[in-house]
Structure formats: C-alpha cells, structure tokens
Length: 201
Figure (cartoon, rainbow, N blue to C red):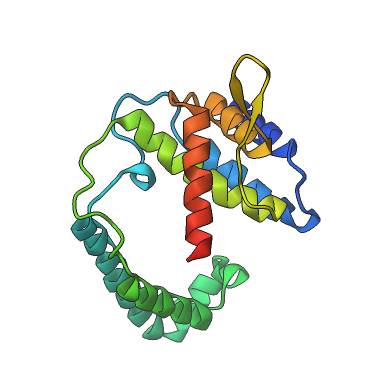
C-alpha cells in the first residue's frame, strides 16, 4: 500500500466502523488512493463539474454502449464463451448474468434524472471542485461505514468557536493525505448539510 493509501486508511480507522464494513473500507481506500495529489491541471473526470446537457450526453453514451455490448454478448457462440471462461470471466460473472447486468445499466443510464444538474456549471476553481467531489464521497462513505449521518459540531473554547467531530476529523485527515488546498471545515459542513437534505427528500 502507498503512503497515501496508508494515511487514508489510518484516517478511516479512527472511526467506529461497523463490523460488516471491512470490504467496503478497502474499496474506499483504494478509490481515494487513485486521486492524483496536488494537481494543477485538469481534475480527474469524476471530479469535473459539467452542465446538464454534458451530463445527459455522458449517460446516453453509457446507455448506448452498454446496450451494444449486451447485444454482442448475447450473440456469442460456444467457442467464444468457452474462451472467455478459460480466461477467467466466469470466475467474475456468468456471461448470461453479464448481459442482463449491462442491459440493466443501459436502462438505468437512459432513465437517470439530471433535472437537478445546473444547465451550466462553469469551469470553477480546480481545488474547490476537487474538494467538493471528495467530501461528497466522504459523507456517503462515513454513513456507510459507521451507520451514522455525517455532522460537524461547534465547540466554543472561550475565545472562538471551533469545529469538531469524527466526520470533520476525517475530512481534515483526507484533505491532508491528498494535499487538497481547501477549507476542511467549510467543505465538511457543506457536505453534511447536502447529505441531510438529500436524505430528507
């Protein structure tokens, strides 16, 4: 595991993780470890803000390609199926199940509602865009791993109000591990509020 991966895992290990969440934790650490650190150029695609039309176009492409691939799999002959099985595909998923899954992906992508996506996101500032994407992931991962809603408390030490809580600490640690130049406090509070509003709908 890389140093960044070790830092990310250590941050999550500070939480009271549910016993059945270990596999999910490994997946989360792996995903976050793939995010480029301290990037000055274009952010990874998953953190790029796009407008409604661009989002719809992406999903329509997913639907189109998933449907085409499912059709190809449905038309495979026995020799091709055997070759895939010999290469290890059947250890992952049976070819019939793969076709059904791809058809489901195509249907979901085609029906996905993007009405809440702004028509024009603009280019924005890279560090904040990256922070927004990462902290949104962290909010959902926090809830998945702990079974609790992400929140950020405020403690007054007599001189100034300071944020506190396990979710805030997680965001702070992950921002440090990924070298994200953004306010952990404002990002964590915004993500916690967005998560609450999403779940109340």
